[in-house]
Every structure is written in C-alpha cells, then in structure tokens.
Length: 81
Image (cartoon, rainbow, N blue to C red; front, side):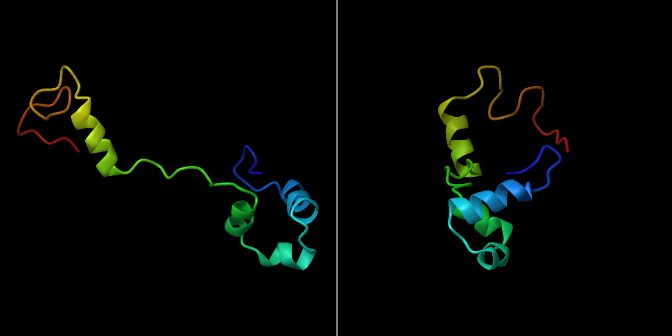
C-alpha cells in the first residue's frame, strides 16, 4: 500500500477501497489516508513498547556488565549527549 519510495500506491488502494470495501469513489476520496488504512486493517497490531515497559524489562533482565544502573561504557557522573 506504501511504495518503496514512501508514497502511496493509489491504484492498489483504490482497488482495495472501491472493490474490496465496496466504497463509492466519492466515499473513497473523502477519506484521509489514515482512515483508509485503518479500514483496510493496517495498524491493527499492538502499540509499540513504551518507556515504562522498557524500564521494567531492563530491571528484570539487567545487562551483566553494566555497573550500578549505568550504561555500558559510561562512568558515573559523566553525561553523554
């Protein structure tokens, strides 16, 4: 539905919307791309992991070589950024 260059493949989307979903052309063109993709089932997976879940996993499975809550290769008191 989205080409390798990042643009929409409109002929394929039109076939899916008009023939697949039974939309009239005016209904198809009245939709935003996000609405159309949602109707086609895109984005119906789980949400990406949030920061809280990442931190929970980091506590449950700490790096063996990380020192006292720091990241590998970082000394206490030094901030990289």
